[in-house]
Length: 95
Length: 178
Image 1: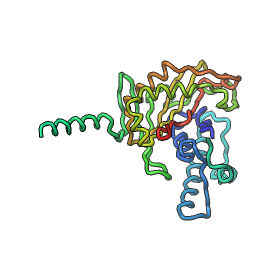
Image 2: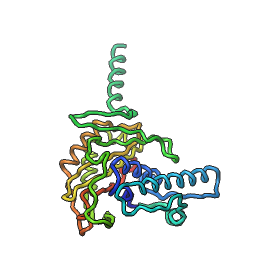
Image 3: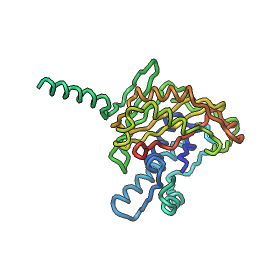
Image 4: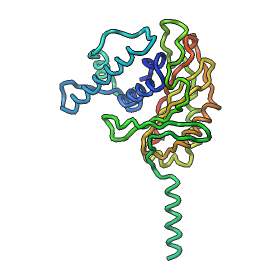
């Protein structure tokens, strides 16, 4: 886990970068572990999954709205299955 | 009785020196420099409130940095950013020398993210820590000043030449694991 904030580093303000950094910090326990998600698990797991998807799409929307961002996409409200599968299938410890 | 009162007062005074305090979201001015504390609340998986401390006068606080020199820049890779984490930690431990024991007991975590110029100077640092902490804003101000004056960063490769501002997140410091 490189704790990279590339998504907002280049085209965002420092304030936008901080919000994204904090989210990555929360997801990874300050860069020490990958999160695990289960969309069909216990109520707490479903809530955690839904919170992740909501925040993911919120940041995606912010990223797409960054001025002069050549990497923006018109695709919104994605379900990031690839990254969830990646999180769920690699060792939790990322240090 | 008099000795007991004096002893109690001494204990109170000593313990208050290193009391764990909640840093309130506000604007602080220390040695002529401003630091803004933002309360981000607790993460879903934690009961600890995280705060951010930043310099509100950083020139790219509210506007993005200049656009890269090419339209589709390659993302910077950490292997090409040579910031001496150990030297940064040494500065932090020196500033917090008298509090390290308490930070360890409290399992505190301090995260730093840097904005660097292409010539290797530190332009800006953002700090994340628990709201209830033994670290004060004054400590952060001292750390900030020392890092900016003592740390210089080298880059390898050519990717860094695409940018005017290069960002780097240092691995968090876990005081509980020291």
